[in-house]
Length: 475
Ligand code: FAD
Ligand code: NAI
View (cartoon, rainbow, N blue to C red):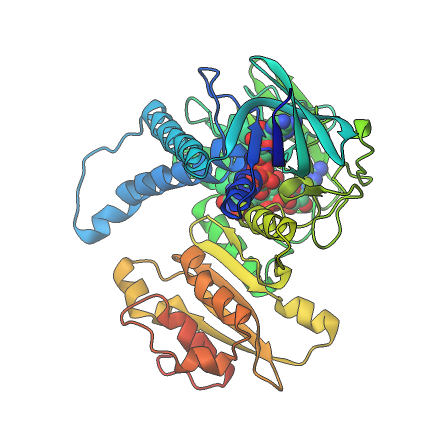
């Protein structure tokens, strides 16, 4: 007889493994299936995030930032090093070690929570006995039974037509995280999050980086003031960013890649690079899931259709994370995973889409939550804005990193915080205070009245809140 579970989760990325753990905490008998293999062929749970996304990219960003500090900033502190060199193989080995620690950590957490882990591909077989039969194709093949199914199969990189990823010259996020030596010239198509983060890694290590972006505006989802500052700083750092381009043809040859495109003026251009990263967004992944077997509905872009509560068209089948609508972020996937497990248990799981933070881990970091000024203008909302530059913050000066600012936008009448936008050091950490404030529907005055440690970067958030009322103390 096949094994039967209350909840079967397909996919062990941040959406899936977190859903499995939460469901187990709530008393369900849970299985989690994931097919990702490490180089030895063993299980590597954690999905895109752990294996070829958030974690390895941050490891490389850290290494390359150390390199940049050693080569450009140590001298300011009176530290002389002699010639600084970069051992790319060692940097990659460290990154792989960090990934493995996370893979192992997730396997441990699943075990600790008594989640049965299956290494292999999960696919729908049929609806049966008020639930579903799920085939697991791993080293062996078996069919398990599930009363409830949570699909968390993630996403894959989108390729440009005519430029398939070979992961040698034309790189997705996967290949971009495994380059064996610093390319002399690196092309990046798409100035979104991956393009900027990976472009920064290789630029810091010495590559000449050219970024080609289709949109006429830089980072249109960010606050316009932040995007303008970011473009200025990245350009000064040496990233060449061309906006409003149209890619015509990509030729992948033995000596590298050539990209034919027209620039914003409509002029034909040709770019020759050693490596090309294509980071033009990602597509939902349902490869091998066999949704047709049970009639699971997908939308026109191939994402699994869900309602606001992550319910699919099938009773007892849920979907979370990158495989459904909404921002493709690990923490969004996790929140949905927890909420679905709680809904299955009859609780009121909740995800607040208005307070999901966005972070770009460049230097300076960029982070925001809530509405931008341009969104509020378009919606006709009367608002007040307050801004404080890191240049006027003592801790930032001591750090030697005074780029950027904190901006707070608040409702003109109620003073409720509607959005917080940060570009500068540690923006990824500073944004947490803003998310918390917005979750509690705080006013700008609430933040202005909170005692912030001195000297700390977070004092800039307090000062931006004071600036909303035009009463900064240090600027
Ligand atoms: P995934 O993490 O993609 O996991 C899906 C899992 O399901 C995979 O392990 C896959 O092998 C498995 N799977 C798929 N189909 C099957 C099947 N049929 N059977 C069994 N297993 C299956 N987000 C952030 O929030 N912060 C960041 O800093 C960040 N950095 C990123 C950097 C890069 C380079 C990339 C590419 C992405 C980054 N992201 C980041 C996005 C983040 O990785 C995703 O939003 C997140 O991983 C989505 O989680 P998920 O659980 O929905 O899917
Ligand atoms: P993205 O959506 O962030 O950016 C893609 C960019 O490519 C856009 O600016 C778009 O205008 C441009 N583009 C699209 N088609 C193009 C074309 N034909 N020619 C030129 N430019 C084109 O997608 P990206 O960077 O691939 O990242 C994928 C996902 O991964 C994102 O949704 C993001 O949320 C997630 N991610 C998150 C990170 C974080 O939270 N720090 C880090 C990296 C990725």
